[in-house]
Length: 335
Image (cartoon, rainbow, N blue to C red):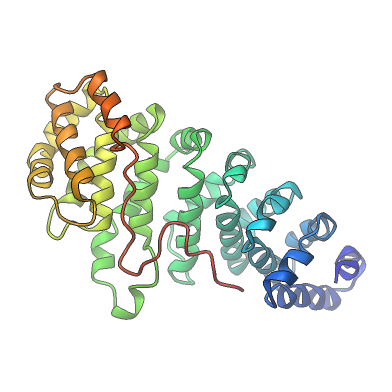
């Protein structure tokens, strides 16, 4: 298999398609097979194949990388092989199905802590945002993979700053978050398939609110009003819980937040969460609402914020959605 791919550039179009299809099939066989195939030599041969003008070759090559990325032992090897720039190029301008697989591969690679900063440096954030924010002809899987890649990338501080500085990123994330009402009305067969794009968008927003640049970009895009609207209305969904967490993060040491929150009617909404709670966030969720209220009133200083960190309030992790799929548990489908 490795020998065939290494000489793939010298093969005819039909032979290239056969070689890429054979690799894709081989990566579906077993965990041991995927680990054995993931060599620097084979990955190096795949780089030019990903940029093939043939849709079939590109799609099969990208799908093979998705499959290889399923194995934790392969993730760093794939990144170090230099294949990520080719995946980013496919994401930008490849064939539609190839773009979808490229998003899936980047999601799989972003699950590894060690890979996140490098993926951001290699230019993946902007094309992932474009795919996540736009409609997909192939349903929600491609958007979900792009969004989850962004979520995991945003766990790295350097990438939070990159997302915040990306033109239109905050507006795009808020627009996806506002799709919640459409998701609530989705057909039954479309629900329970994992985290929906709106929920993922709020997860990314919550991470962005954890840095100064992110807070400024979000507030400039109208995030305070948008998040307050998402919190309103029973029941308190998982996405709404994350909105409370994001508002709490934005409230930290910001006079601007106080003004925006008052104008958006945040006090009434946060008071309801602080007194009634609900959902799976429990005590930490109510405590965040209380602290955000105190910040709005100018009552929470640096000492109180330090206590919030030591008490674990700032590390609140939103509950999983009803399908039982967590932020890191969806990259399991073989292609």
